[in-house]
Image (cartoon, rainbow, N blue to C red; front, side, top):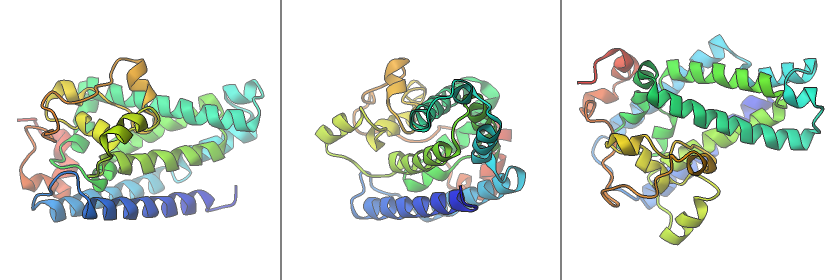
Length: 264
């Protein structure tokens, strides 16, 4: 893999998807935006910049580097059983997606992990920037989990790059303020997590928050019984958390300190 290939591919794909979703939700928003949009964008994009800096300083090679190490040293199940490249790549993408699903469920049910993850849920609106809004502690914990999964699997580095591009892209897509026609949404939910499906996960109602955990592939929620087809209140989902609805919560310092403050 040429030096810089991973960064160039992920950056170009992310910028393209971000721009496409931002234009789509600007032209055809599913929900009406409130006056907080500017402050939210500054806070959410600012957190993203801190996340990128933290990852590049602490683990510059990240999960892709783990894939390269596994390939070089023959580590992981796929290398032990000498699985050919293309089946190994497909299995790796699916297995890593399942790993992220499992991690997401755990972050909702372990109290101290929920305190870290809830910053993502505290956004009182959903748009493309919500898909970028994760606390740096969560990003680093997620990175450690992905590295462990890549090494255990022996996932090819190229498959890890593809997975990262898919994960980032689908996160921006399913958090965006856009809507698919009902018939298309019902069909698409068998292949990808749609915005209508994922907004239920961001409901202010905790039983709905603890459903629809998938980011990319929608199969795991159906398989493990965490799928919810529609919210109890119909189409009018109240998004966010009851304790963090003030506009001041969009400031970067408030976002960074939120895990250390009481939910009251």
